View 1 (cartoon, one colour):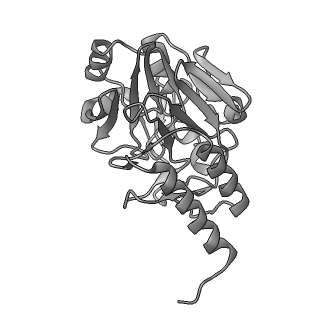
View 2 (view 1 turned 60 degrees about the vertical axis):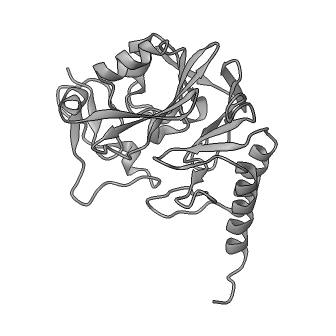
Amino acid sequence: MPHFLCETCSIQFAESAAPPDRCPICEDERQYVPARGQHWTTLAALRGGHANTWRRLEPALYAIRTVPAFGIDQRALLVRTPAGNLLWDCIALLDDATIGIIRALGGLAGVALSHPHYYSTMVEWGREFGVQVWLHAADRGHVTRPDACLRFWEGETAEPLPGLTLHRLGGHFAGAAVAHWRDGAQGRGALLSGDILQVLPDRKFIGFMRSYPCLIPLPAAEVRRMADQCLALEWEAIYGAFHEREILADGKGALARSAERYCAWLYSMPEP
C-alpha cells in the first residue's frame, strides 16, 4: 500500500489503501488547510514530474531543493564532515539521481530535523541510507509515519556527529532545534536554523514567529531567550530553510539586532 504525502506540507503518512481523512500537521494553527481542501500524492507520482537541484553554499555544504516547488518549498542541507555526511532537514523528493549523488559524496551518517514541518519523507531517507533520523522527543506526537530509524533525543543538546551539535531552541515548536556546525564558514562556525530563526529576504535580519503563514508572533521573552541561547555559541554564518536565505558574515550581529527590533515593536508602537 502507498505512503500518501500531503501536497500542502509534504508530510508522509503510514501506508494505507486510501488517502488519510485529514492532515494533523496542516490543521495545527502553525500551518493551514488550503481553501481548496486537502490534496494527496505519493512519492512515486512526485518522482514523475519533479527533480532536485543542487547548489554548493561552501566547500562542505550543499543545498538540495525540489523543482517545481513542492509543499512548503524548504531546502535540505548536506553537511560534509570527516566523520560522515549529515542531512539537515528533509525534502519530500528522494529519487535515483539524488541517491546516486549522495552515495558518490560518501553517503549519509545521519539525518537531523529542525521541526515537524520538515519531517516530510524522513523515514524514506533514513531507510535508504541505513541511518538514524534525529528529532526531538518533545515533538514525537507530530510523527505521522513511525519507524525504527527515528531517534528521539531529549534534553537541550545532542551530537549526531562530531562537530555538529543540535540545540533545542523551542519557539516555533516545543522541540524546535537548530544545528551548530563547528567547522562551517571556514572554521568560524555556522548555524543551520531551518525557519526556527528565519533568515529574511534582505539577508540582514532574522525573523521569529510561532506561525509564519498564519502570522502568529512569539512573546518577546521567548525571542530574547532564543537569541541569547544562540549568541552564546561560536558562529559567523547562518543558513536558513529557503533558497538564498543565508547570512554569511556577522550572523550573530544580525541575530542580536533582529531580536532587539522584534521586541521593540512588541513592547511599544512607535509614532509613524
